[in-house]
Amino acid sequence: MINSNGELLSEQEAKLSVFNRGLAYGDALFETIKTLNGKILFWEDHYFRLMASMRILRMEIPMTFTPEFLESQILELVSHHNSDSNSFRVKFTVFRNQGGFYTPNSNAVSYFITAEPLPTDLYLLNTSDYRIELFKDFYITPGLLSTLKSNNKLLNVLGSVYAKENQYDNCLLLNTNKNIVEALNGNLFLVKDNVIKTPPLDDGCLKGIMRKQILEIIGKIPDFECVEASISPFELQKADELFVTNVIQGIQPITSFRKKNFTNHVSQSILAKLNMTLRLS
Image 1 (spheres, rainbow, N blue to C red):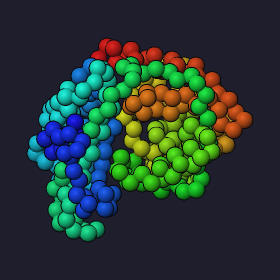
Image 2: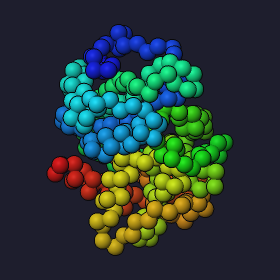
Image 3: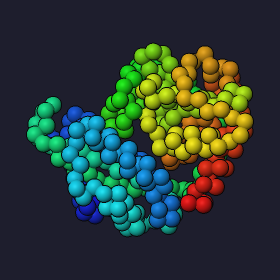
Image 4: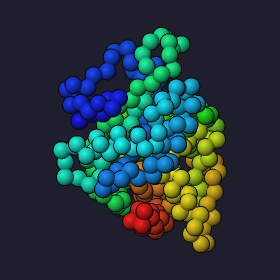
């Protein structure tokens, strides 16, 4: 089932116009959300990021778009899903209504919500080989727009094609200053001795929901210093550990970059604390 502007439709019934502005101009935003046992994880953070992003794009926020209303729309869709899974990957997409060319006729919006079952409930540590490389064909231009989850993800698509063609599990994206910004599907953290670094938003990385949770967890770990600072490609070879974060996988340790191999002790500890937080919430 798909929720289209509050109406539950089958996949066959749900339709988008060929003049949809998200398709025509990338005039759309989305949130990738995880639900667990009928509850949306980190819902407040998702909601406020979506509202802030809509304001940045000058979209008109409907009066009905309260946290309670959108939460009910998401959970209603999940409850109608024909699956025994307790956990779902939900994608909430909002787009400016069709009409106009670059200049829209209206700032009013519509939305649709999709849901897919996930194989696991709590976050698990994937310890299998996970090789990465730098993607240097195109670069992220740092700025406010680069921190948003818009549906203009060509750079991520091309990077994913490159990774698949060259048998890598992921790639790291660089900005125009040649600093590492993030992975194709999440934020990057680097561990060296007792310092854990992640690129700052000013470098152009996504304002990730899981990034925020991990920063809060690290801030409570004794003997570790958390730093939001630029990461150069040269630092990768000196790192003890690298890991990628997003709300679906939680934490994905990177096992190797070129000839450098990494441990996963810190990411394993952080993941245990993350799952403990979910159990207590």
